[in-house]
Structures are given as structure tokens and as C-alpha cells.
Length: 143
Image (cartoon, rainbow, N blue to C red; front, top):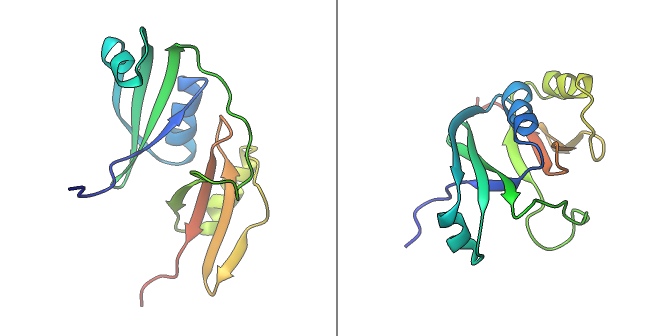
């Protein structure tokens, strides 16, 4: 059956802005960029589609960015973190406070305060360009 998780997908309003965010600020590498039409329409069960898909990779993890041109993309209703469904994309970080300060310097908005959730494990939630929630988490170094 299933062997591993492959990727997480995010629908974006401006592909170039999102590529810059994930590459320049978070260190992802762009590894795929393609436009899908009839095949995507078939998957979605609609008559027509024009969708740019970009894969951004960090380590073994992939975020798949979708920019819908047809049908036109639309903002999602904002939901609290405790609403059912996917709530955030978790990213591991080394040098939590330096990363936090760098993101703040770029004007990123954090949901709350950075918190030591258990001894030596720091966590903060921040927002991506289309309101997607990302978690930065640093774990203690192995002895």
C-alpha cells in the first residue's frame, strides 16, 4: 500500500512571490515547474484547467505550489488553528532565534509568541504569502 508521504500542496495567488518566499526566506530549492491543462481538468472533474505547479524542496520534504489561472484561484475562508483539517506545515530549524529574528526583519507576521513547548524545544507559527500557516521548531541537539 502506501510507502511514505510525498508532498504538501499550497494554492497560491502569486507564484513568483511564493517561490521567492520559500526559496529566499526559508531556503527551499525549486526542483519542478510545469503548466498542466487537460490532465489537471480531468483530475479535478472539471471541463477546463490551466494550472502552474512548482515543487519546492527542503531536505526530503516537498511543498507543491499551485497557481490556478483557470479556474481562477480564490482566497480561502480563514479558520482558527483548532478547526478540523490541515492546520500548518512544520519546518525544522537550527538556530531558532537567529531564524526568528531574520523572519521578523523581513516583516513576517507571527501568530503568537515563540514558546519553549517542552525543555529545549522552541516553536513559533508564522504566515506565508497566502495566509498558509508554517511552524518553525527547533529540537535539542543529540548528545
